[in-house]
Length: 82
Image 1 (cartoon, one colour):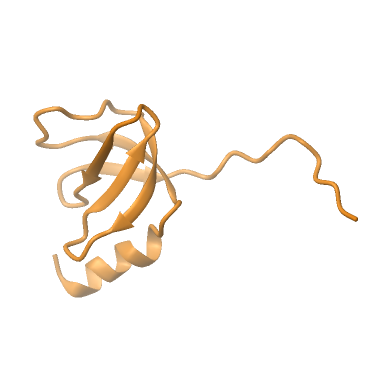
Image 2 (image 1 turned 45 degrees about the vertical axis):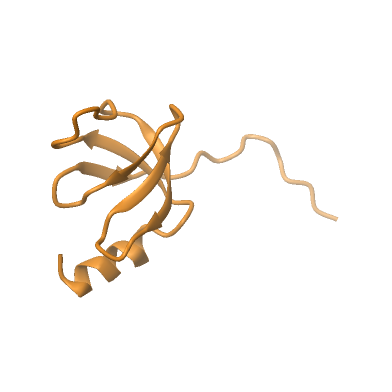
């Protein structure tokens, strides 16, 4: 992966970004498709390290795995201001 691609992933998927896994390539113990998770960080080779909602922590390889960003769920509770 080129430097520009790595920087793209770092800029586009900062810590706290929510993603959904569409499919996992070559992992012997893949996370199931449709699982959601939160990006912890993107390393210097472009791997997105994520904490998934099922408790697993795994790196996503953009060249191999398929995923997409999801919008955070808006709170239904009204926000009080003073």
